Length: 190
Image (cartoon, rainbow, N blue to C red; front, side, top):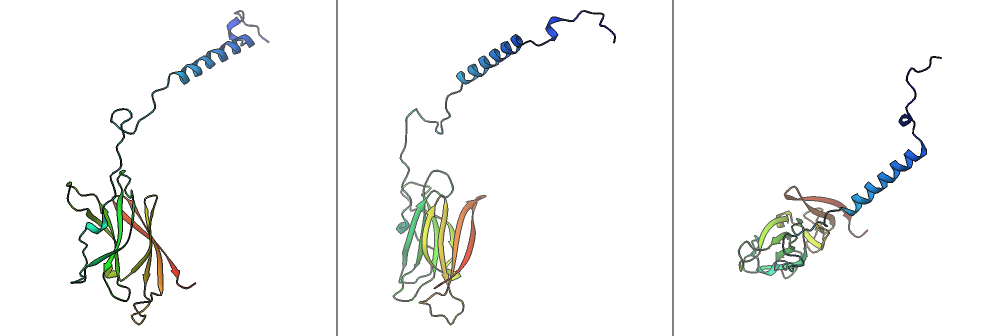
């Protein structure tokens, strides 16, 4: 074995004291980083502590719906409110049909938002179920930005209009600038 021409250097061998010094410096850096944190993020740009109350959901009775009901007029059968598009303002979802003395008139499901101009009626911004599809609607709800309802229909023209014999659980969710529908058929009377 050949011996080195240069004597061994003391600083090339790590001794326990070197590791302790390194650990102490690293602990100091971690402690300093924890102490120098930025302020907590705030969602609003307003003055500290300033809060505004959320605007009320649009009034479903104040809208002219696109239904051809003649002189009998329209009826809001159900409504639910919630923030559907994540903008912080509640929308109203309304189930509307023509007034009928008997039977089950087809219903439409409409999404309403606040008016663009103060004092104007709410705006109808989407039709989730068109009355021309001839569905009845039950179980309307809004939960976590999702509209849920059961669409009631008929398996054939011979089924009496009082007694729907088909049902679909439907959900609509705001995605990519529009409402996307998903359905799940279910048997009635089961």
